[in-house]
Length: 117
Length: 253
Length: 233
Image (tube, rainbow over all chains, first blue to last red; front, side):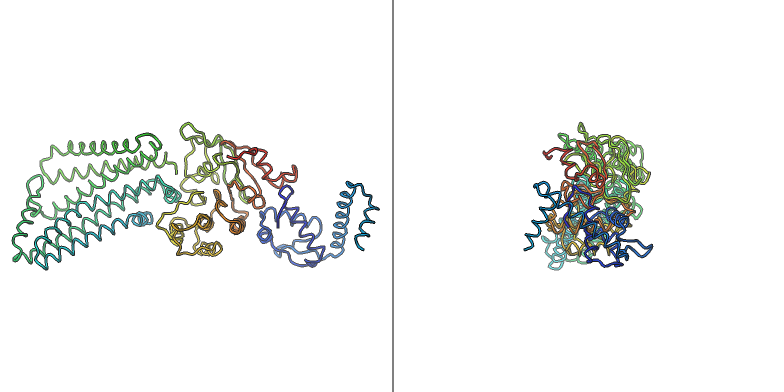
């Protein structure tokens, strides 16, 4: 994975895992790689990897069981909420950019509908 | 210490191998000469073997000093100085390896010489002229009190060996000091090489002078040689400490 | 504190290579030591490795001044190749095994395999990239407390850099301290979590990289450019 070195790397890895969880690529209750393995697979510092799990846990998307490792949360409502939050954020970012081009949410929606046809 | 000595040997073994190879050729020549009863071949080979016995130790000493020079002035200095060993141990391994090499070389040539002379003696009936020549040559080599080396007893032999070994160790530690001063203190200065060579000559001279002063009142040659060896060894120890100190304090690896 | 540098200064004749550097490095972190060539990184590392004596000040390892004893626990990799010319890759491993109790020949073999080196290769005929890999393999095969690698990515192709990064990360545990110097700043953005900037022998700053990204939105490379300007060397 290529990182944007001007933004916190833990956040970028966290976003990538979030994406895997809300798209179902990683199933509820699935075991996640250990901190060291996460560091190795993403090529990041182990402290950064530990931060990723801390933040994911704070967001309620994963849980650490002592001596067992870290797992995707089994709480599907939580994942659905995460999915909603991600959608809303993506839409907001999209609308912010459209606003720069002078489009209102309504006109942007029309553009989207036209694009679909 | 043994591991360091092992690597000191590894660094110098090629020179020793060549020395051994040349000696083997000279010895084969000698045996051929003996078999064919060719006095010319015998003469040449005896001359070669004598040169090798004397020059061999010098070559080994030179190789040891060159190795130290490389160990301090090239990138390979890390190899020694990154190990958890003090300069005293690192230098000590070099001195001991050299001392051991000289002792083994000396013993080797002594054994070879004895063997060759015995062989020659066995054939001497047919080679009278040459045998007489060699005997004459050997009898000319005498100690200061006029004892021919053909008539030495075990004790005198031991003292002569001790004396020579000390002299070699003294020479090599002097060279070590000069090389170390050159690498650590004079590094980058003009006439670095020349200055360190002058230092080598000056210490050698001073050490020789000290030996002379100490032994000139001693009438017995054997005692005198013992004292001379002892002083050479003592000055070698002083130079060893000085060299290790300079390495410890000043060396930039 | 694993490594502590107090007012450390090193002069060579009239030139001051390291100028009153005070710095504390903790275990459990990977530090990037940055600065242009000649800024004093190598000299500071050699002082910390006990290969040079400071002209003033001291470096402490685990509370004790750096000494012959600390060489048993501090693995330093010089930027230049330094093996004896007669050595094969096997000889190099045996040499480390002879002198470092924390060296594991099995781990060395594993690293050689990853780096695509074989024991029978002669060091004399290694390409500069292979030599760089060999130096890393033999250094990282030690189970030291501190690893100081001077320019580990120098002369190494893109693919092998990944190998080296993986190897470094594998060893970056909570108990160990890694210090990497490099002028290839981008190579270290993700693997280092702290950076030490050195300029003209002086310490500029020691920063936490993720904090810096969060608070200032700048990368290590950005900060590097801010400190040293656009001219290198």
